[in-house]
Amino acid sequence: MTDYGHEPVFGVSIDPTVHGIDQAFAVARRADDLGLDLLAVQDHAYQPSHLDTWTLLTYLSAATGRITVMPDVADLQLRPPAMLAKAASTLSIMNGGRVQLGVGGGPFPDAIAGMGMPRREPAAMVAYSDAAVGILRAALRGGHIDAGNDEHRVSYAAGPVAADPPQVWLGAQKPRMLRLVGRKADGWISPLNIYVPPAEVPEKQRTIDEAARSAGRDPAEIRRIYNVIGTITGAGTSTRHDARQGLVGDVTAWTAFVTDAVVALGFDTFVFWPTGDAQQQTEVFATQVVPAVRASVTRARSTR
Image (cartoon, rainbow, N blue to C red):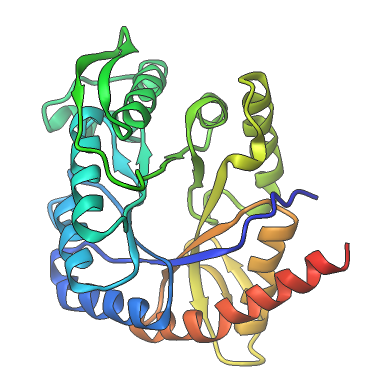
């Protein structure tokens, strides 16, 4: 059993499609009102129906008062780290520190190449991501940056610096990227639970932890973020894990699932991807699932 002891954090994924603009802002404002912690927006710039993620995050930030925004995850090959650090620091300064940085290496080399970037096969993508994460973390703290590797190198003066610089959370699924999380990132963002089911999580956590220890880091300092897709149903309905729809079950089932993900799997942050009515699902998640999970985690930890 793995529990790194962090207090649970909860957010909701915002649909970035152009036809969903009104709903995106309605969900964002309601999530803010209900006390959720994060608004997350996926980043697939090569999708013609998707709005630009960073522009959408900026507008969502301006339309809300307290909730943090994050890309889930920004494509590092389409958003080079020096400029991404500048954008994240700028938004953090302007919105009072309400920014975290979810980033990833970019899963679709043909689509990335189609937008004018080099086509990198997996090994080169990992090397690029390694350089990018190092550059990002340094640049967010300012000063002269001379960093990188053969895949990507910079030498420039970074800034401005936010009062509370965003953390860099890396999306990863396979061993080389998981080891990069352990060596360099502030957090691991797991893909959706339909791609990384609970049974596969412990091995991935071990890979991160071993890499962290080898790099002289405390694994407990690395945040663990789970993207969880599904639908919260009415009380007493049967629970199922659907290959496309994710977790389908009532508040009790969701509470048990998320609690176990905290105290047994080591996650501390949850981004809910509702497959039903986004506004209604966000309401139920924030008002029923979240408080139940907080109470359940407290009980579980107190009995150890």
